[in-house]
Image 1 (cartoon, rainbow, N blue to C red):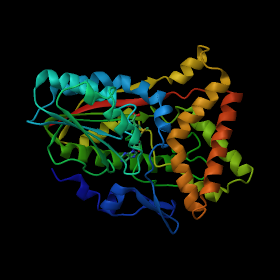
Image 2 (tube, protein in one colour):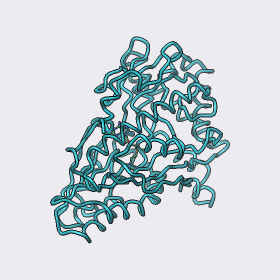
Image 3 (cartoon, rainbow, N blue to C red):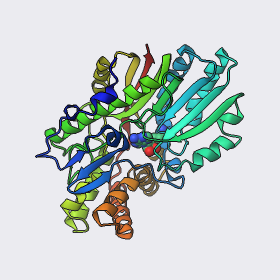
Image 4 (cartoon, rainbow, N blue to C red):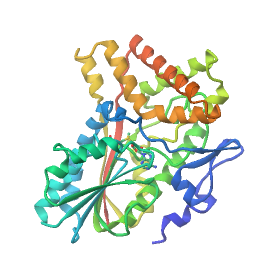
Amino acid sequence: MERLGQQFSTSSSFPLNNDVHSCTPIQSPKNICRGFGVMGDQVVDHFHPMKGNAFYNQNSRFQTEATQPAMPLLARASNECALAQTVRVAEFGCSQGINSNAPVSVVLQNILKRTTCEVSVAHEDLPSNDFGPLMKLLASPEGYPAKFRSVYPSVIGRSFFEQCHPSESLSVSFSLCAAHFLSTCPATLPLNFHPNASATSQDDRFAFQQQASADLLRFLDVRAAELMSGGQLVVSVVAQSSPSKVYPVLERTVGALRSLIDDQVLTADDAKALTCPVFYRSLEDVQVTFERLPSLSLKEISLVDVTNPLWQDFRSGLLTVGDYAAKARSFWEAIFEPFFVAQLRGVWKGDSLRAEEVAVGLFDRLELAMRDDPVDCNFELVYFRAAKL
Ligand SMILES: C[S@@+](CC[C@H](N)C(=O)[O-])C[C@H]1O[C@@H](n2cnc3c(N)ncnc32)[C@H](O)[C@@H]1O
């Protein structure tokens, strides 16, 4: 099979209309892998990790809940995968590690029933990711290395759009709740920041859907290259079963952004930079990608509506409305704040203080809106398992 990476060097892989959209990827495979694009005359970096100093770890109860449906898939992957003299396991998009320990433990439990070989486990995320909390966990009595024999952990700072492991070396590879982040934005959305918001036009949504399709193809192609024959891959991504499925927390954030523009804290032109390189695909979007990947066989795929434990706690009276609004804000801030601050810093020529103040203002307004009229922060995810032929 021709490596898809080569196809990405041609502009035909990116169905962009540069007359309509002002943010375009730089058409070189290396830069696409590394997340650079151009907006006006500025080169922008689209890759930003979750909020550091363990803030993501402290505010990711939803993502912890969302690991649950992946566990049976990980168990089946590690029972069925091919094994080598040294068994190699890899995670992609590990963030600060709060949701790495349990999935890796499931994989190790199953693999170590089948072999006495040594196992290497590599956790990958962006070079700018806060790997510190994961390192501490791995060295602590709670970490899986303390619980399993002959297991050797490591971390890798590299984009998951690049190959991160030697060819045909991995037995099990997995990525949870991460591959909905894109390599670039194919359009700018001045007033609604997120392509899955209800206000996004059909044309803009289509541009993001196409970008997400190209990015998933690239992500899966490099994962396929890393897997040994018979190796297995488990992935979950945030999804949107249809364009009419509305995510209330996303709509509230759009409202907060528009109120900043109405109050002249931000111009509509500044707000263009806040367009997020992300897209929540449908199950069908994921499924069709496999038709273009003859080296991977799709074994199972499903869409799950995951309830946020914060919402559950609020509904059952365990959280007051004020506590719920504050925690929902932090959940969302942990994901988007680093991106917003970096983008505004770019717009305002390095004025970090102003960028941080405006980002705080945006999340303050989101929290207020949640307190006045609380809505859920639940999301659908697609889960799938595939095997390398
Ligand atoms: C929502 S977090 C999920 C973290 C963890 N897997 C979990 O389930 O809690 C998404 C992660 O994907 C990472 N990410 C986004 N784009 C990436 C890329 N191009 N390469 C590697 N990691 C990326 C982010 O840095 C972030 O740590």
